Length: 314
Image 1 (cartoon, rainbow, N blue to C red):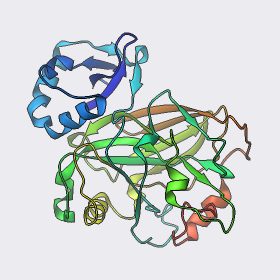
Image 2 (tube, rainbow, N blue to C red):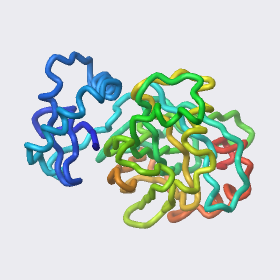
Image 3 (cartoon, one colour):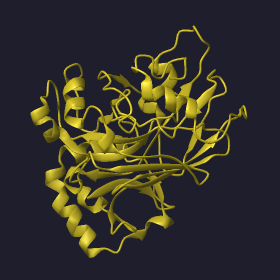
């Protein structure tokens, strides 16, 4: 089942289920008596109690034609998660680099935007380049702390797409951090939907594809992931307490990264989940060389990852 929020031109943040990958069905009728303060609290409650509502959702889908997806605005499926964790340097770059040490960082939930929204390159951000990073994100389904790899997948509710927008190239020698590089508002396009884990036979065999203005950039499979999802969950829950609706974005293959700049139109497709489209706005109208950042690609094939995301553009 694929879940998401949409705006039909009259009402906003309607909870829907995708039907036949072409239509979306309003399932709000199944939520009478459910009291939630906003869309994020609602989807968190749905995730935590999905076994109680999924049959009713399916019945509504079975008897309704729904609305064509092209006639609605798709909203981010998790508009403001309590926690977003991102795995750092978690791909083998098509098998061309040594196994990296497992690591993660947190990203501000204020970064989340959805389909048709705009990534804003803040003119106060002193980066010398901005990159898109295509990622498969894991949506947690229940409380999770000190979870073993053997039990980790039991904590997964589903999956969604995530673009980890990154600001790089800060002043050499200056103090930078993942927070400075990753957490600017709008730097986390998400969606278009959450797909429940039963719909994905193997999350480590999913293709991801990004184009910029129609030009191919990133194209890879999650089979290149260095530390698989169970290990990521084990690593993060050793430190943090996760809950329903929290997100772990599993990292990217850096081959194919390219600059984001004003006027760009990005299309990000995740197999089985759908396509997320966003625009790019830069009030400062900064410009960089277009196309694939081959320097970045080469560095990531040999880097140990310890300075990834910091001021040296790695």
